[in-house]
Image 1 (cartoon, rainbow, N blue to C red):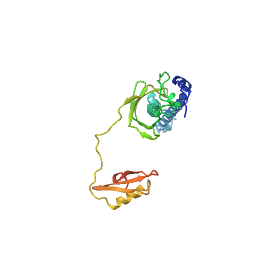
Image 2 (tube, rainbow, N blue to C red; image 1 turned 90 degrees about the horizontal axis):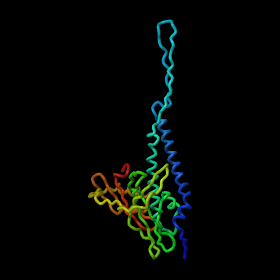
Image 3 (cartoon, rainbow, N blue to C red; image 1 turned 90 degrees about the vertical axis):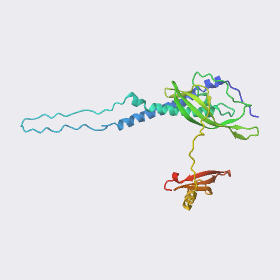
Image 4 (cartoon, helix red, strand yellow; image 1 turned 120 degrees about the horizontal axis):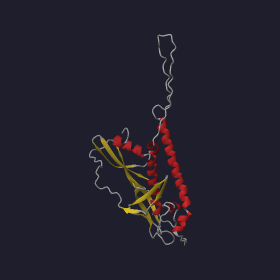
Length: 278
């Protein structure tokens, strides 16, 4: 039987602070690189960049007296405002916050007998985190996927809504896919760094039940459509099987199945309005 050592959360949090710093310094470096690139593009594309001022044309005169010709000398300089310099930063900060939230949800709701360093270092420095499920005797749970579906700015950073699904181990050793769940994650952003500022906040996942848009067919599809579908399907499964077809005016729709090594087959579709040149 595997044995797990119980380690106080506070001890882990202290020992792994440096891990968080190393990870987030890399994020700061990415932000600096984006800002420098943005400034360079604005400078290169600014009107008049690289153009040299023309010399004044000689003044024609009918007198024999010498005429002094003044040479116009000036320099063309594009002055970037603070807004220009900061324009790229919010976009990068938002992407970093979304990545942090998805990463955090994946680690937080995964229980496999240990607390990963990334989870320990994810919280703000003064976080007070209660005991998390880990160690001997706890069930195994893995986050299959986690995706952000809403981002809202806050005073200190962003509130990220994340939807996710977990796989949990049954007593017989089999893993069962659980229902889709969702949480809000508060992400603090400061000086190019991101950190989780609160425990996950449960919310309802997005559900869409009032949307119509299925393609309805009532006519017969032509043979060329079946041939085109099977040719295209060969990229995914050389043994693709057509199970349904139909036409709606000049458009057509063909349902076929593709499989993998498991022996399972999934119905997929090809439509004339989604195939270039069909």
